[in-house]
Amino acid sequence: MQISVIGCGYLGAVHAACMAELGHDVVGIDVDAAKVASLSRGVAPFHEPGFDELLARNVESGRLRFSTDFADLAHAQVHFIGVGTPQVQGGYAADLTYVNSAVASLLPHLNHHVDGPTLVVGKSTVPVGTAATIAETIAPTGALLVWNPEFLREGFAVQDTISPDRIVYGLPKDPESAGTAQGVLDDVYKQLIAAEIPRLTTDYATAELVKVAANSFLATKISFINAMAELCEATGADVTQLAEAIGHDDRIGKKFLRAGIGFGGGCLPKDIRAFMARAGELGVDQALTFLREVDSINDRRRDHVVNTARDGLGGTFEGKKVAVLGAAFKPDSDDMRNSPALDIAARISGEGATVVITDPAAGPKLRAARPTTHVADDAYTAAAGADVVLLLTEWKQFKELDPTRLKDAVNNPWIIDGRNALDPTTWRDAGWTYTGIGRP
Ligand code: UGA
Image (cartoon, rainbow, N blue to C red; front, top):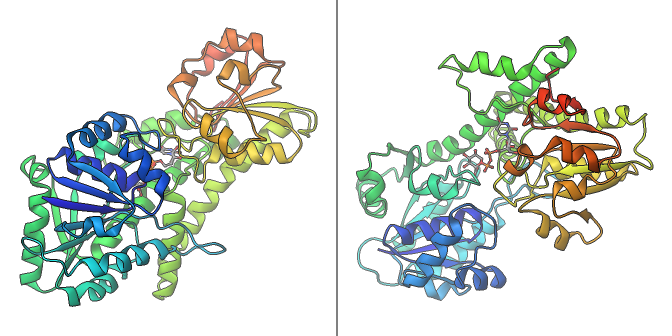
């Protein structure tokens, strides 16, 4: 099928390449010429395991192209919208500028003749009610809208796109339009449907809500275990054992119960805030006031690490050297949007410490974006002369560090494990003072 994907960030670029991998003829559109140039050469502009090969293979085959020109999508029958919806400056709501401009730029091309009904498919995370407005905007062209939220995780983006846990279609109210739209999208996802991936059909509002509800639930789970970590710290209990024990109950489950410095990234933090803002507009803000607490528990974890490090260094960071292992918001990603690691590093540096950061994937990006930040190539170099080492992103490379070798590099063998990623006994046996989160 002829497909376009508007917006070639994490979501759009991966979606475009995966659609080509499924055998479709795909054009990815983005306003960022540098991004389009890189993708067109088959080079991923971000770090995502497995994506480089997939991209290169499909660009090479001719099934996948990228362009800055909307005229290049006129021939497509299905148009996916995968642009970003960041948090507005100075508020909690989602900024819909990119979604609105994608729809406006697409509109003149929807009248072009294509074989079969034209479909616009929304994948961006939007405030509930947005899809209905877009459906009205495109209605005069005869094109139909489906809201098809994306659930991909960075680091697993390709797997989550080709083999998601479920697919959700938010369909038009009118049964005939709904049937037509569903038929076209079923054709796009033919292999996924044949693989019996659950496909749920809903109205627009439910589909929009499914996405923010899922992310709110995940954020709540993380803040729940981080709140338990606070209790564990006050009582000498061990949150990792607590998480394992409650996780054995199927109804609770073990996933997303890793206590630490909390959630960051381009999705969870801004999605729960936009959800609260939208609930306020709808007059049901009370339904989501608990998310405010989820957000503050999350912020407190960052404060906790800064305070612990400062206290242990004698009440001040002045004149101290701090090594920070990790800059990305999670491992297997070079994404530093709302990264807890970077936030903690910046606060400590702001209090007068010399901070040296290292990150296997985000390091070079960080060096380019902030030339005054000290970025080291590896953990051993970052730790040279350090008064405390902070492990803030649980990269495999950091979990496999040699405590003895690292001890030779530092000034003071003290490690704060902000992700509970290390074995305390191994590190203590090697002569380190080990401080975890919510564990003795
Ligand atoms: C998240 C959701 O997991 C995806 O399902 C969703 O599609 C995506 O947002 C999105 O809205 O596009 P992602 O932002 O890639 O995916 O990251 P997560 O794996 O959810 O991790 C988010 C943050 O929570 C990270 O900073 C991670 O370190 C932290 N986390 C995760 C914890 O602190 N503890 C945990 O147990 C799990």
